[in-house]
Length: 166
Image 1: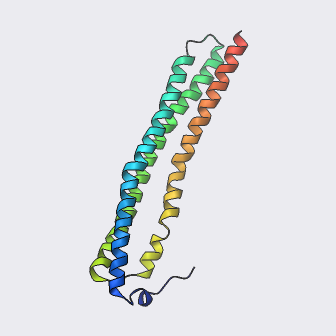
Image 2: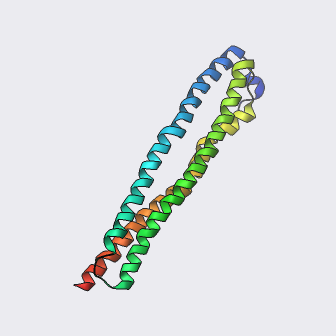
């Protein structure tokens, strides 16, 4: 993909200032989304995984079954509790990193709004932000899915333990 040169970008300073104001509004909304909505959704999902796995471990422990199967089942549930905690920590770090990136973009566009001068290389770097955000969020997402898998495995072990004990 070929990017515009600095000269082409700076043909019209008034247009650049208009673009800068638009970008500032857009980035401000993005920043709010990152810090409010995304965190709220992540908090709800992670809390749900913690609650479901924790409750399953507590409910499974008193059921009569082979000790080995009971331990395997509860270990899966315990892993299902631990993984969302790690995912939450990773999400927090990702949110901080992405907020920093958005802050740099806001700083750039504030400068453009002031002086009307755009820099093609900086804007090219900004185009990579969505891909950076997606890559940064993948480890936490994988941990969340692994927590769900741990829950399912815990249920399978508990079900097998109950059936074998009958």
